[in-house]
Figure 1 (cartoon, rainbow, N blue to C red):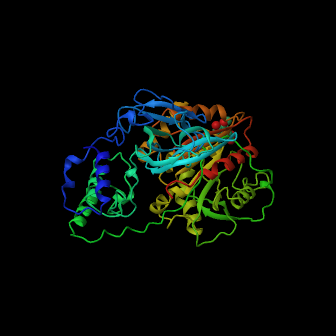
Figure 2: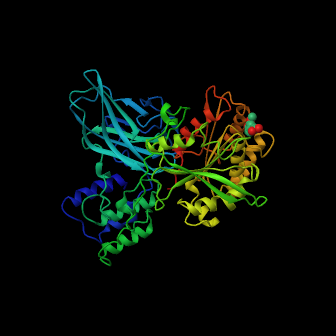
Figure 3: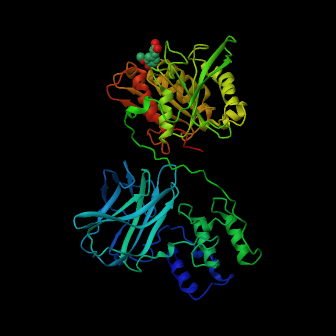
Length: 552
Ligand code: FER
């Protein structure tokens, strides 16, 4: 017996009332390893439209320039699915014209299996576009939030094609973001052809959504345990530990046999809100013209003196505290290094005006209020400044101002690494690559600007040395982020561009995209720009908003 039939019979019985515990609904042969919830019960010919992509894309084509291809990497059933990639916006994806078989004003049932790639859950949507009086209109047939790599089935038993519409186009998109996704087993039929018992309950234990907790829920739970690729509803996570497993089955069984009368209280978890919209293929953009003028909400630059471990020398750094700085709040912190012949004052001088740009970026919501520190490598040198950074500068600044470091112990500096960035221009960029190689344990975001790594001779050797350091750290590609930039006419371009190309070959360590929810490595090239802070400060404006959103 397959799942579909289980669902159908469950409905038939539970319509008459909640089924009693202890029936033979527990029998293991009722479970199936087969994911197919649609085609097993009904023949493809039972539907007005059916495609499981086993013999090609069929009518499915690109929507909005996305790439659409048959894949055997991840399937819901059978050996093939439709893979949609290269999406530039949430509405892009794959589509098909419904054709004349489907008529305006008529109702149909729809079902499609979907599986997002990437690292984040995606709200997947089955949508419809149509024409009214020459104007495109859009509607959503159904949606479902699906974990990456898992399958979910969007299923709607009755959707009426608007009666004033023509040219209906069915498409799969995401509510937001541009992650790749897979589509499989799509069916459109007369009302009732698609089983919408796949609409789940939300109450713990009521997995089939019939408003009672019964033996059928136990059967469904075992189905999900046996089919980990199926996206299970949260009502199946009986012990609220975010994993659907035998521990949930044990609890449900105890409940059904009245050994317990209620499930454990789910913990109250307040997830931090972060709806930042990354750009996938970022292009150079200048900040608005007024960003270097005095801002209505000005931060403060303070000079901090400390002793460097190199030669026990007194040195200083400037610390930008955002407008409204409050020592009871926690702030992300960005260390930004000057270039050769410059010093710790260069960036907050009237030449570069980084402080004013930061004021405007914060006031306009481009970035959250953050602390920005401009040190100098001249108390050490660019190659071993990272020692002064870890031993002296971070403890001094983060011991005094409020960051995510709970204390200045190396352990707490490490624990707050997702709230710390390091970048630099030219020799400051050389310094940034050294810092990446030596201090990745303490910093998760890096911004090398117009300067290559000097650890190694050839581009391949430089890439290899960076990869070796990353491998040694044990961090995965979702745990560090490198966002480089330069101008196409910058004297450093011929140095950094080949290094970036060499790094791209290490696909385990670097996933190339400016969407840091999907990858961790990008190289922004500003057309025609040369080796000058006057240009480089725009790269800071472009890149900084993408920092500090991962692992909040
Ligand atoms: C580069 C890295 C650093 C580069 C120049 C520098 C020309 C710095 C030079 C200096 O400050 O003297 O890739 O490319």
